[in-house]
Every structure is written in structure tokens, then in C-alpha cells.
Length: 224
Length: 233
Image (cartoon, rainbow over all chains, first blue to last red; front, top):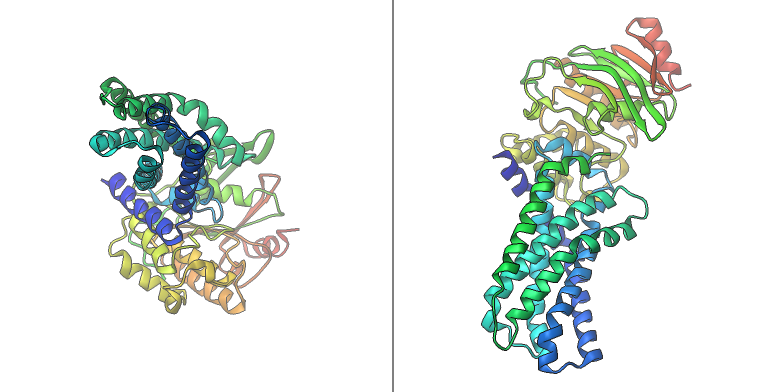
């Protein structure tokens, strides 16, 4: 019970601080928007090309935005050593990770949901017919990005060259999630949409495995 | 300032080593601190005072040795966790004083978190600024909120790392008075200090560290005064 109540309390803190400053949300929304517009104008794809390459570009933009969003996740706990006070206060350190990764997933999903209409407009792809499946893939993919990213953010925050370390560690580990998310998204946005349940299952299993690993070993990532 | 609801808790360090790479921050430290003692740690910069306090707070895991809290109820009981004041405030600058205290009270399952934070805000003299973000606070006010955060769950062990930092003479008097009350209530207090002050007058025992090892440990009048007066030198 204390894990859940601690997580809820910390999640409230994460949401409150972000909505008060709106630093991360503004940065990521602007970043994804710029990337999508740039690609759209640089390539000027036909509808067929958009269906084929658009989802890949969308996930690429999500990855870059996520690495921007995840960087300060643990870094800002260092300014006043608040990570130590959290570790002293919570009975299970996993609550710290859980709150952060739920907040990160929520912020990513919010950004993606805001970007979907722009994506549909710039790439001339109707997303509404498959929007429920697309949101499922965006959720599972973003959850995977957040789980791995939150864990790596905890590691990189304590290292030298921390700004470089997170993207360096993040890219290789997230390659499977991004490849599968993009592939499933391509099938969903095809002229004859198909739900690749194997891909969806892979994303769910990836999330489950990494979440379990974080639950088992997360405590060690928070140590000095 | 705080009423103790649990049997007093002591601290036992058994052959504690803490190594960062090849550097020993603590070397075979063994100390038995009885419940209700007020221990002052002294020593030069880099002697290991902060590391010892962080090990006691369980923020840093020792490389070797064992730390225990004789008399503590359970590990999961919030009151059994030490209250720790570090060099930094350990609170969120972007949150208000009240939000910070309520946050840490909720995390530690303090009954009626809002009432407890209000009580502490009044005691540390920040009630009028309760709705101001901590980033707008002066150094002394930040130290007061840091102390309030450490006391929020009514801990039975208090660990203070140079608690007078940033406080003006009035603030130091207030801290000495408050610590005295906490100590009289049965709380075990361990703090690092440089030199003698109103706060060091509370000490019942002084321990001097050098190079990560305990080099002097006394609770007798003259020796205690000598360690406190020249501990940093």
C-alpha cells in the first residue's frame, strides 16, 4: 500500500512542478512540431510515401523529444540533493521510479496526442479510423521509452558527461521498441490497415521485462 | 519542537569502511551511540564527518561494516528513519514551503500532514511565508525549512551536518533552543560542527575524525571542551 500511496504522492509532485513551469512540455511539443514540419517540407512525400515513411519519422521525432524530456528527470533532483531526501522518506525506492516513469509516459503521450493532428495534416494521412489502435501503440512504445529512459536518466545523472551519456545509452537499448513501434504504426496507417498483434505483444513484453528489472534493481541505480 | 512517540533509538557503527575508488572516506569506524545522546562530530574538512552522517542516514551504503539502530521499532516505521539535515536544503525550490513539508509528511505517512506542516512552519518562523516558493527564500530561511523537513516525521534520531550554516545569531539561538528541546524529549542527536557555539553546548559527547578514522572520543568535561574548541584544527 505504501508503494502505491508514495507513488501517487510523488506523481502529484511531478505533475505539479511540470505544469507550473511547463519547461519539458513546451520543449518537446515545439521540438516534435519542428521535426515533423522540417521532414514534411524537405521530402514533400506523396500520400503513399507518407504512409510508408511517416510513422518512422514520427517515432524518430518521439525518440529525440523523449531524450530531451528524460535528461532532466533525475538531473533536477541533484540541485538540492532532493533525491536523498526522497530516498530517506519513501519506504520503497521503486516508488520514485514509478512516479517518474508514469509522469514521463503521460507527458510523452500528451505531446504525441497533441502532435497527431499536425502529423495527419502535414503528411496527409487519415489517422482517425485507426486512432484507438494507434494510441495503444503510442502508449506501449512511450511506456517502453519512459521505463528505459527513466532508469538510464538515474544512471547518467550521477556521471560525468551526463548530457552525452543518456542519448548514447538510450539509442541502442530502444532500437527494438522503435523498430517494432514504427512497423506496427506503418501497418496501422496503411491503405488497408492491419493490426500487427505480434508487434503489440512484443511491446507489452518489452515493457513488462524492463519494468520488472527496474523493480528488482532500481534501488542500486539510486545509490551514490 | 517534537514529541517522541517511540522508545529512544541509538546508533551502532561496526567497522564501517566507505571507499570511493581507491580513496577511503571512512576507515574502520566503530561507534556506539546510546539512545538520547547528543554527539558532536568534529574534524578538518575531508575528515569523513559528512560521509559518516550520510552512512547513518542510509543515503550512502558502506563498503564494509554494519550499521544498526538499537531500540528502533522497524525499518519501515517512519519514526525509525533518521531526520537528516545536509549542506543542501533537500527540498524543492519550485514548491512552496508548505507544499514541501506536506509532500514529505505524506511520503512518511505522518498523520494529518497539513496540520503537522503548519505546526512546524510556525515553529521555524516561516508560517507567514508558507505560500512562497522556496527559491525566493534567503539562506537562513532555507536552512529553517531544511530543519523543518528533517523533523516532519518526529524522528527518534536526528543527523545534522553543520546545522548552523547560513543562520544569523538569532537563528543559531533558535536552533540551539529547538535542538535542546528535541534532545530533552529523548531524541538521539548526531551533528557535525566547526568550533564552539551555543549549539555545541548541548553536546554530551564529542568525536573527532581524521582521515576517515575516529581519533578522539570523549564525554568528560575538559576533554569534550578541548575537542569542541579545537576539533577542526
